[in-house]
Image (cartoon, rainbow over all chains, first blue to last red; front, top):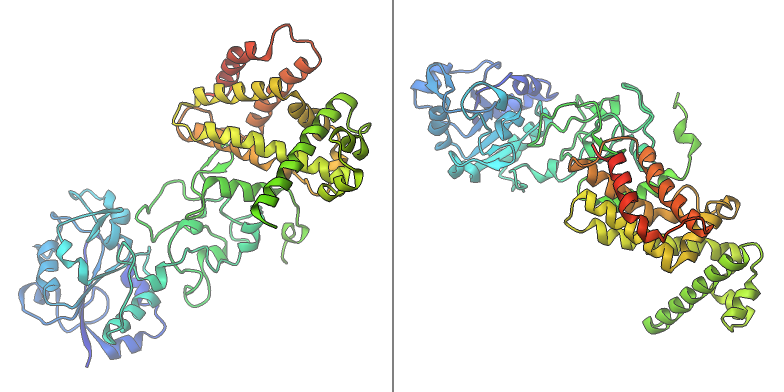
Length: 289
Length: 199
C-alpha cells in the first residue's frame, strides 16, 4: 500500500523540491508513495483541496521556514501544519530553512524560524510534534537521504536521531569524512585553486567540512561528486549556523583558524600543526596531472 | 619498569640536563664533553650513556625540556581569566624571571639552539622541539585577536616582534650591557609590546 505524503512549501525557494527530482530512482518513490500534494509533481489534490478538505495523510514533508504571518492560499501556514501534523505518523523538515530557519530567517516575516529550531535554539510553538519529526537539513536537501528516510518510515525502521532530530546515519559524521583532500589537510597543504583537485580548502578558502555534520562525501551528489571533491569549499549548509558570510575565506586570528575541526582543542590542533608544518612532502606540493 | 623507577630515571635525566646547561653556559657547547658532564655529576661515563646516547641527542632533549618548561609556565598564564594586556605583562615577567634565576636555560635557547642549527637539523625540524612554547604564544595571540585586544596580522610578524625584543633584552643582560636588572624593564617592555600589537 502506498503511504500518503503531503509536501508543503512554506517560506522557500523550492530548491529542495527540485533537488528531490534528481533522485535517480524517483519511479520507485512514486510506486511506494502517493503525494497527495507536491509543489512540482502532479498530485490528485490541489492546494485548495488540502486546505479545505479532510484528506488522510501519513507523512508531512515541510519545506521552507515558517512564520505566523505566512499564508498559503490565504490560510496561515501554522493552521495547515497543525491540521496535518495531527494525522501523520511522521513529519520531515526538508532542508535547512524548515529545520533551522536557514537563509529565510532573513525574510521580512515576523520571527521566521524552522519548525523546531531558530538557528540552534529550540522553539516551542510546535514542540508537541518534535517526537514525530525527522530533520534533514541541507541547502538543498540531498535527495537520497530523503528517499532513504521515507523508505525507512515505510518499513518501520528505527531511525536514530541527534540533538537536532537529524538521522545519525547521515549526520553522525562531518563532511570532512571521506573528502578526497584529506592528505592535504593532514599535512597542512593549502595551495588550492578553486575548481582544482589539489590542496586543502580549510586553511585559506573557508571550507567548513571539518566542523559540519553531513555525509556529502559518503553519499555523493548525483552519485558522482561533492563540493569539496570538485574544488569548492563546504559551506556548512546542514548546520544551524548556515548561512555564514564571507564563505570563501577562512577566518583567522593571527594565522590560526578561528573555527577548528569539531571537538579538537586548540592546543592539540596547534601542536599537530607545528609538527606537520616542519616537513615538506614534495608529492603533495605537485600538480596531480 | 615501575613508576617509582621511572620517576627516578626522569629525575636523573633532569639532573643531567641541569648540569649540562650550566657547563654549556660556562665552557661553551663544543668545549663541553659527555665525560665533563659525567664528572660534574660524579657519574661514570658508561652510566651517562644509559640516559643519553650522544651529545646531540642530549642537546635535542634539552631544548624540548626547556620548551616544555616555558610552555607550562605560559599555559598557566593563558588559562587565567585576565585581559590580554595583563597576560602580556605576566608572560614578560615570567620570561625575565627565568632569565634571571635560570640564565643558563634562556642562554641555551639563544646561544646554542638558535646558533647551532646543524646540531638540531635531524629531529628538531621547523619548530618541533620548541612546539610547547610556540603553541602557547600562538594561543596568547589567537585569543588576543579573538577578544578584540590585538590587531590581526601575520603570526610571524607578531612573533618576531615579541620574541626578538625579549631575546634582545636577555642577550644584552648576558653581555652585562644592561645598566639595570631585567625586572626593572618589565613595565616598559610590556607597554611597548602591547602598544605595538594592540588594535
